Image: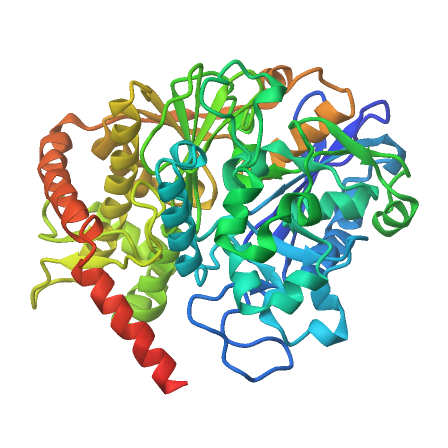
Length: 574
């Protein structure tokens, strides 16, 4: 817990609620200055549900990733009173709350907003629970959505870079219709978890245009680039009927038709939640934001040409532009979807920190842990220090960074990773460095894909856990991309960005641009590209690109065959 006491009572404060994959964080901020007064983290009790539901020993399908929405509510009840108490502020002076959430994270609820998994009759049905962003078992449904959309020449595919992802809203909803039609029929709404949390806090269903635009087919038709609200639309009912007869009226029956801009006030805190959180009834609650997107203004980025990398278990790449282009493999382009006044682009890599964690937890020999302990370092820090001693190319290794599938630019959860060049002399730190380099190559691939469409990146900004912990990673990214990298000053960039949206909703600032000028900051240090490393990395990247297309674009790719065999064997075993 970080706290600062003795705050002037005339100050006003805002709270950012940042809901991540394994935990939720609350951050208390002095609204006008951005001073971070207190933060608290609460780990979810159920975490990520991947093998079996609570109280049910039946094996869940492969690539399942569910959550319990009760964990989100408990996190707020624990963290918000804690930060207000520890900072010593008057609850009456807390004027706004902002929420950000992993996305696309979806749950079925009743018409009144109660999660179906809270009801006893649905507890043992996995489709009644939250489907987390990294729930990938809906890949067959995504494939079918893409097939039907291509056949019908649906324009939304162009907005999503040519493919709709298994991670997104309608892939997960179609999976529910096909596998559990009774759950689909019982649900009054299917809703993003961030929008659901806002609904709980203020008692009104006010959905974010950002999540709808980036994940749920709510797009501008071709020729509607002027930002007019009249341009937004879902595909026609005939498209949804072609996916499944029960989906013909899915928009009117199960999904809202009105969405609200970032920074808008969704409503005021209800009395029940005000009492639970120890805050004032009616406190402004902002429309929800996507967790990665919230970090962009917290880095001080509100203009084009600057790509923000949110480096954590996965990486999101956020970019602003004055124009809309059809860019291969992006996760959407939405007017006002990241920062008002610009087209916001999202791309991403679904496995980054998770890859490094996999290596440490499953493939590092005991002597590494012993050496790390002797050096008073954790295993990650020891591997980073040893890997930093190596020159580019010295490992003799090349990795393909698809341990959790590929999000951009191939948009294929069925792909898996690869590590090439192993010998009997290969050491753990060499593999660790190769994995870092692979994720850097993946980011360069995304940047070059934007550049092909004349959307150029001049600077990189980084935030998130890896940006604060792993200096080697940032230097390698600068060397591989040839771009300087600035790091967010705040350790909690997403939570700070959510608090900034809360400040806009409360009227402390007129716009997020104004808030970013006051609050968004970066560290003094800049990671500059090393020219000596560039030529080696250019050569390695050329090989990465060759393997990227060989393994990623070929329908008969060895990686796809191997994953199919594994899935078949898993089904047979269980």
